[in-house]
Length: 249
Ligand code: NAP
Image (cartoon, rainbow, N blue to C red; front, side, top):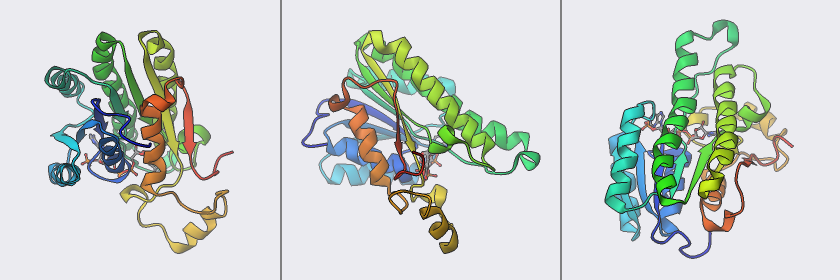
């Protein structure tokens, strides 16, 4: 995004302690937004806050478990009351607990659905309350191409990310009349802690299935999130943008 298109806006980013969420927080701050970055790891958040402030940006960090409905509602209320506005929410926090169906425990099913889908619902509901009052807002939910296409060994993860798409489309219809846009970004394979540890052999084979022939970097996903969050995407809602280098076409 050119210039500081988000000057004066307030944004909440979940899962901002590392990976895609961290990069989104930095890029939103560069675009002029005051960023409230949340996750569970306080040390990583402090480090992010220092980095954004050192480059002249505005950031505040809060520890939050997105599964905690009441804590998310309290955070949104607090941000709105303190900053006087809440313009952007990026629901990025997510986990994976992969396994084939026969061996998938109920615990790993619940953990993934609770974090990825309920956490996203918690965020949307908490933020929408204030965005409705403000009569404007933009929500970007992080899904996955796995939620679009499915993937063997990831039934819990794919179900949660497909759920995020359904939630996104429903809320786009529900909140559009209040001038609140709701979109999703569906990354493909992005290099982060979540995807660390793949073998060279896997990378070579997998890249053969990607039209652009490479894994994505966090900026590839973050740039699209920032675009959808901001005014240049002012007539876009209810959409799922795949950022996957052409893995799923
Ligand atoms: P990551 O590096 O593992 O980071 C995940 C982030 O989520 C961390 O900041 C983590 O922070 C936070 N988080 C996890 N559980 C949380 C909870 N209960 N409450 C609050 N924060 C929580 O993952 P990533 O690769 O950047 O992924 C970011 C998002 O993109 C996820 O939704 C993921 O499913 C999605 N995605 C990633 C890829 C990929 O290839 N990397 C592809 C498609 C979709 P704490 O541990 O500090 O809480």
